[in-house]
Length: 235
Image (tube, rainbow, N blue to C red; front, side):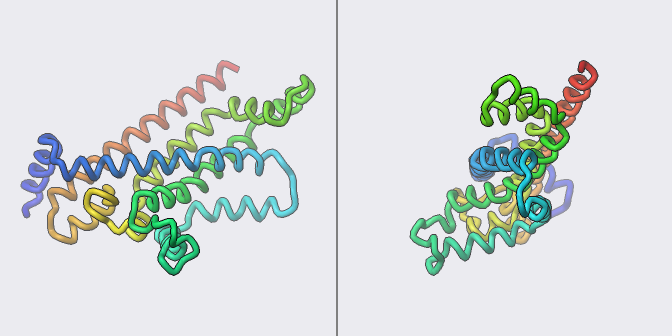
């Protein structure tokens, strides 16, 4: 198909509300959002604890978190596949080739991103914040809440970057989800499939959706950076 015709067909599919197309988009948003939400608490708390405490093996743990940022998502998919397959230790969960499996993969992909960004944000915070809070009688939980509130812009940046990571990944979703139409087919796996079939219009349409999502995430990050600058100037 000629490129111009493919683009026109892609726009037609989007504007006319093609059912298959919007089902793919809905599955993507659902699995990505749930996976990201599941990763939030352990990653943010973990990032805070690593940054604010000194313990044996801390440097190695930080190195592992940083290394996990560049871990190929297909490797995470392979690990999950082995765990969730019938012969695997979690085979009785029946998560393989299901949305639950994709969600688990998205959470594992998001955790290193959220942890690393939170860790960096907490490390950059004024150490006197914790000292002052303790002096005023705050508990450890209250100190953590206070510091995380002070570095909230960094935490929100972590969430935005984590969202971008899970929305754009393809390897894990393909291996664990199986790319089943209407069930586990996400935007990225559908693009790969449609392109291999020569259905460029559908691939372009989904690519446009992915571009819009990426632009929205980057716009949110830029607004957040602007708010951070204003907050720093006001201090």
